[in-house]
Amino acid sequence: MGGCAGSRRRLSDSEGEETVPEPRLPLLDHQGAHWKNAVGFWLLGLCNNFSYVVMLSAAHDILSHERTSGNQSHVDPGPAPIPHNSSSRFDYILPTLVIKLLAPLGLHLLPYSPRVLVSGICAAGSFVLVAFSHSVGTSLCGVVLASISSGLGEVTFLSLTAFYPRWGFAPGGEEEVESSARQPLIRTEAPESKPGSSSSLSLRERWTVFKGLLWYIVPLVVVYFAEYFINQGLFELLFFRNTSLSHAQQYRWYQMLYQAGVFASRSSLRCCHIRFTWALALLQCLNLAFLLADVWFGFLPSIYFIFLIILYEGLLGGAAYVNTFHNIALETSDEHREFAMAATCISDTLGISLSGLLALPLHDFLCQLS
Image (cartoon, rainbow, N blue to C red; front, side):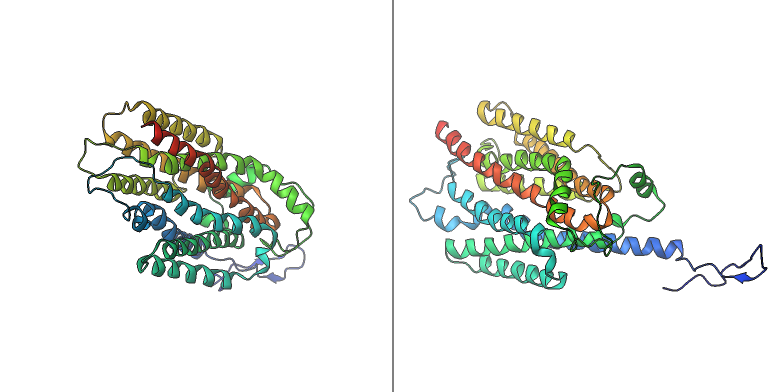
């Protein structure tokens, strides 16, 4: 890196010798590099989540072959039980869950470039299979490829942030002051290693780091449990007949508004920082309770109230996600950060899996009551 032209010199007080201080990177160039990193990771996250969002938003339609094969009329049947959507979601989440469970143990031994390549190939393959599918089995294979792509990409890109300045903020700013004021999340004696690398951590150190991360992992699990309980168990039951939108169109609007809220809040870190993510977990649980009560009693008169609540649901989920990883980046040491990012990735997937186990039986139960 080039130094500043015409760097200042000073005379030594004792011997009068000229000394040249080490060249420093101009502040403007440093800020430019941080912005490039921030934009680069933003684009990587956008591309990685693209297949995930498409597959979940289209879950009502991907398996339409099976739903339309029966003797159904052309009249919209309303919120009847559709268990096959559930299988699509489980096929999506299970490969991601396996990848994230194994990632903290040995995925760091595989270089980043092959991981990114495999993730990209799986994403492309998923769209090809689903687009040209003529059977449910082929569609589910495409869903599985999308799951592998999203899970592997998420672990890879979040772990990769450990080798870059923290979340793209320029040094000397508010984030550096905030980081220095906080107490370290993990207090262990670790050997000197490459900054950001977790390859030298022993199993005991990894377990110690993981226990220290539970303060952030648990509320993120709760947030995703509540919001995917809504998405998997209630979306198809929040059906309004006093609108021109069909049942499938209402489902698509719910998914679109949820993902729009997630996108907005995940991109808002420079505007809003939340230290105590437990508050977000509580608000999301209240959201779940309110929508569950509406499914049971049907007191909301218009679908537009549901639209606002689902947008709010997405804002809470995205804020919990981005602030959790931001706080971990600030509160972990360099040698722990790569492992900490990979280990915390399990939070959202674990919450989604647990919600599926409970939400899907509840969905069928509520359908039978209606």
